[in-house]
Image (cartoon, rainbow, N blue to C red; front, side, top):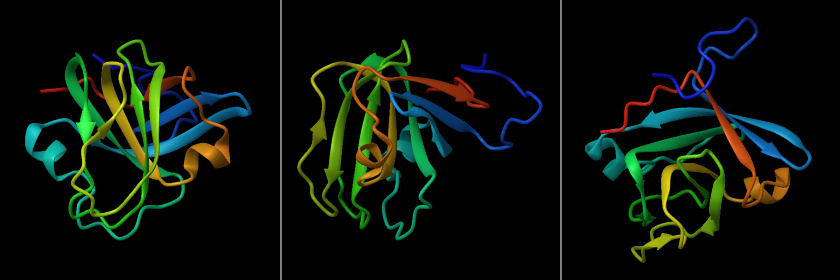
Length: 140
């Protein structure tokens, strides 16, 4: 099952998250992280992330999620997204290399990591909705 549109003419060839922010839609090309091993590794050791790129963590069910930044040199914004594809919370500017867990109070099924400052630059806020284009529902 696909979460968003399957292949449509004019759609990007890569998995994409479209955030419906107040200022208009914002597209993020994403790497999918949907296995326990891949989720544990995430963006560790990565030194670069394009301005319009991110990593989408897919979990099998909606539940409280927490992350740490161990071995992650990039400061990140973390968008926690519920099963209904609504942003339930944002952790802005997560500091590199920290081992303190960060998360939000509400359960989420998806977490989108983007460069720090992304949400402020694009006016992304809690309550905004997201669509998934070419993103398989393969949480395991």
